[in-house]
View 1 (cartoon, rainbow, N blue to C red):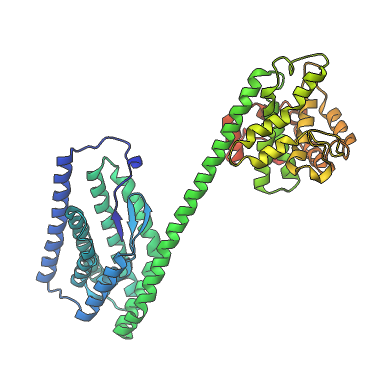
View 2 (tube, helix red, strand yellow):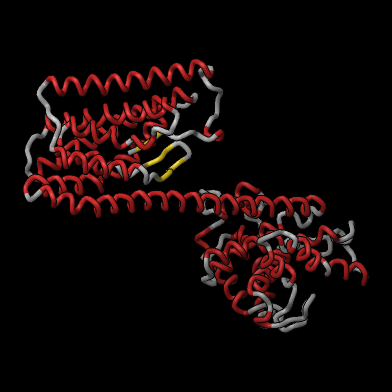
Length: 474
């Protein structure tokens, strides 16, 4: 069964429609109407000759429903689900509409400590809806065959889910300026999904009660309620998993947006290298894909490529743009960018691996690089990937001190330095990517190499459309 909870402030997007006094009056009137409706329905049932079902089974279902009502699970800020659905529908189908009203009333006695308006609304809704569900089940499908009981259970379930959803939506629309339809369909979706599990179980228990022994249903009602409880918990776990995935995706977007903001700051001071980091990021990602690395490693390769030159922010103005030879001091300043970049990223929680990769992306495979002079597989894998992507992008880009090389010339130089400056496996992966790529991609002029935060975020989350970097390259 579903209950209306108190919406969080984040759920309220507009001002309340009613004043506090008007709201209280409306809620009390709504509760009074529901209670009067339940009382009127009970009177009509008695007048038409309906009687209370067997006393002992009715009492047992009332106790079971009372206990189950304590097992609430919150599915959203304004939606709770209890596992009292099974004994309530069982009472409506097998014991009759009057017994269903009694069971529904007893079920909520434990809620008397709540604000009385809320209790009246809940109790009135449940008694009215369960009485109507029992009446509909008996009137439309009075047969006690297994098929007939299945139809009765289905009818009672539909009436209960729809009635409680409608009453809950009205209640919430009074309490807040909320769209009743939105809440109604949220409740309805949860209820109808649960019916797939509950209806066959309740129909089976009803058949056992009628044709085998009343005690057979009592024996199995405990395990059936436990199964329903586990189903509700499964729904809660699935919702929590979805929220966690959403949070992880949001964190990924934040990380990438932060990275692109840093790189934009770097590109703003050096128009010759503007877009270079985005190109390196794409080349590094595609090398990782070609090498068969995991999705996590591909994302890290992309992020490392994007941030590999962030330390150049610390290089004195004029050095990066210089067209002639660099002095010893200027060259030292340029070389320091790897460690400067690593020191920047080291201060960011969660970027430790990225910082290490950035620190070593100018190491050489033969050990003649900087800053650590490490060689071979001692160089972090991400650093080796970024080194190849960086070198290729740099060679195919125009710089103040030289013209850009063609894609074929740049590839030849990579292959000549394979095993010396570069990791042979990373070189082979990039060459394989380039063999199947477009001319613009090979030349480093592909439009997706432009640093666009929105496109990069979409690419990282796998949501890009036709404007995304070419996934068919690998």
